[in-house]
Image (cartoon, rainbow, N blue to C red; front, side, top):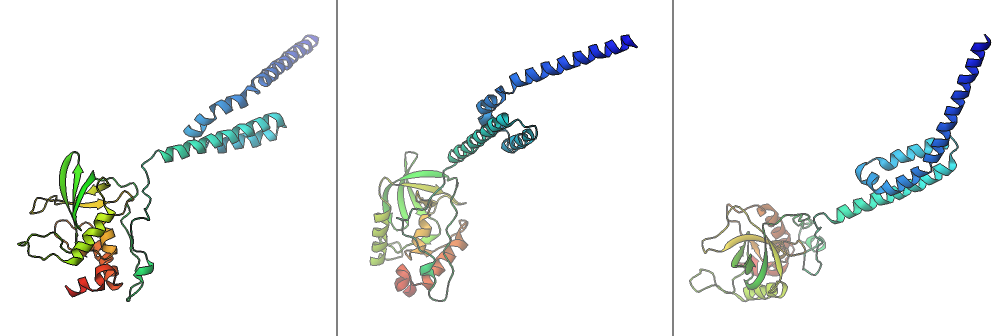
Amino acid sequence: MKKKHKDNLFWGAVGLVSIAVVVVAAFKIIPAIPAAINSEGEKIGKSIEGAPEALGTAVSALRGYGLDALDNNLAGALEEAEKQYNSSKAEASNTSAPKIVPDTSVPRQTADNASDAGTTQAVYYVNTTDKIYDATGTVIRVKDGDTYVLDIDGAETTIRLIGVDTPESVAPEDYGKQNTQEGIDVSNIVKDTIKAGDTLYIEYDVGRTDTYGRTLAYLYFESGVMVQEWLLSNGYAQVVTIQPNSKYADHFATMEKVAMNSNIGLWNGFFASE
């Protein structure tokens, strides 16, 4: 019995020594944890969506053991990791496709001036946020209200707007339509807005050329406003749909109706008399 008692004391002492070694080792390692978390905070934030929440749970658990100093360090590390995580998300968002912000310098009809003449329907524009265009062109010159000459990849290209028609201003005698003062006025307004050197974005439809060899397209200002929308909403153009290019035909018809009912632009007499 004495021998067994001595054995128990021996192993008990060994156990206490082992615990002491573990505790000492733990308190040597523990102070390094906050520094490691701080240095790796950004990686944690980027790679683990729920890292800040998980660290918060760990901090709460440590409070139960009274490790206040370690708790405070971890809380600081958690806050820093969360800041770096949010910062990295903001940077990633800023490097994504640029957002198109409407340019208020381009005349646009608002819901306010669309409320007369029996309609309260607002004018909605095509959503061009993150839109991928088919091509980009630099304006060489404006021929008239609906026909422009652009430099596209080094080639001089005549663009005829799809879906709209402005009054004539440069039509030849055998064209079938006469040139009008209204056509000259609209052409001058367009020339004042779209100048040589300006950038226009290009979207094609099913048919790419007309019988005159002109390229058919929807054009967009750098602000994201479609040129056709600008013309229609200000009463400078009428809708003309020629198949198969009818991607925005219904949309254009809505814009024309609002301008017509509100007597905007040439709907104040010229278009109504045609």
